[in-house]
Image (cartoon, rainbow, N blue to C red):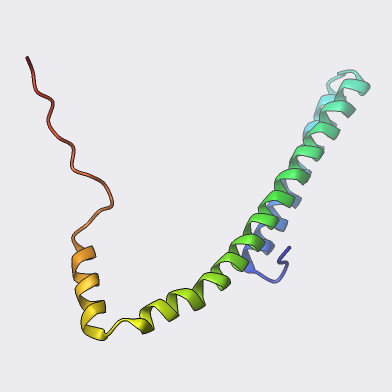
Amino acid sequence: MSDDSPEAGFITAAYAEKVKEAFLGFAENLSVGQAENSCKERFLRSLTMIKKARDMALDAISEGYVAEADARPREEAAAEALSEEDQAMIEHALSGTTGTARATPARLR
């Protein structure tokens, strides 16, 4: 997991906030007289899901940084293999595309 990234800091802060919210809900439910065992179960289930979300998010950004770092040398090598003229032609050809095919109108019979 990448704890050095700015995203990791945001995820950690959001995790702390969600734990706080789960605790406040737990305390509120106890204060209004709900059964202790069901309150504990809901609280623990919430904590488990919050931890899972945090861990998955940290793993995702860690994997994203690794994939991004691995892709850079290949992209740079591919760009270097083309002449400036070829690269300009490719960029010009792609500049007018949106990545979606034009829809053909439906014909009525």
